Length: 237
Image 1: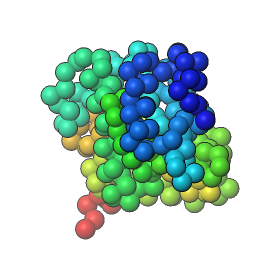
Image 2: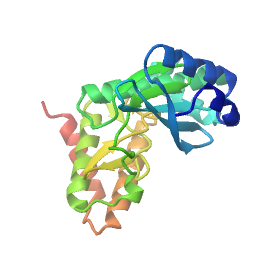
Image 3: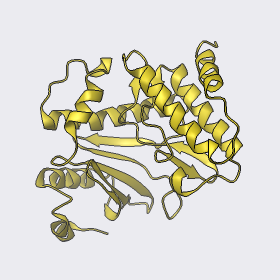
Image 4: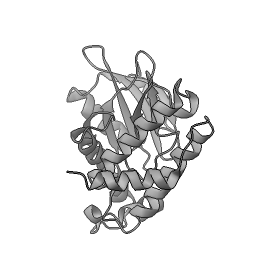
């Protein structure tokens, strides 16, 4: 468990502002302390953390200094929910984290298999740990035993999103977990309403990414037919 002293050895990971917020979340009981890093990236750092009852949570920390806030702004400014957002770096990053939290709440509400979000504090999102003692692997590292069945499960998730006027906008083998042969969708910071003028572009890219991966696993796929099915499903009562 990483305690207060050990934060000092992670100066390239935690800035002082983030460190203070982490301790606020600890004091509020969301977790006891950070357990281990799962991914350290330019945009976000992801850690597991332990709660009082011994269960695990995921802490996703968007980096305040190195993340590409211009790319974030390009996504946010077309989202009708964030049309009044200003271009300041820190405000964009905070809105980006809040957007992921907000999207996760919505996906859970509509029945998408995704992590439950617990809290968002500025650039930090705390959410459900998906896995057993180890985190569930990304699809890229854990091809399903029955690719055709897994593919259909993923498409059903996309149908649910689209029926509820949402497009994931970053769906691929990197953002789908294989948890005991069930797909769990993650990374919802880019997810946007279909009212977004670029939503069709994102939708087509999502479908292409998913279809390309499963074609390599010998699943017979008609991409245009899949898109048609998803859009028809949206209009079903």
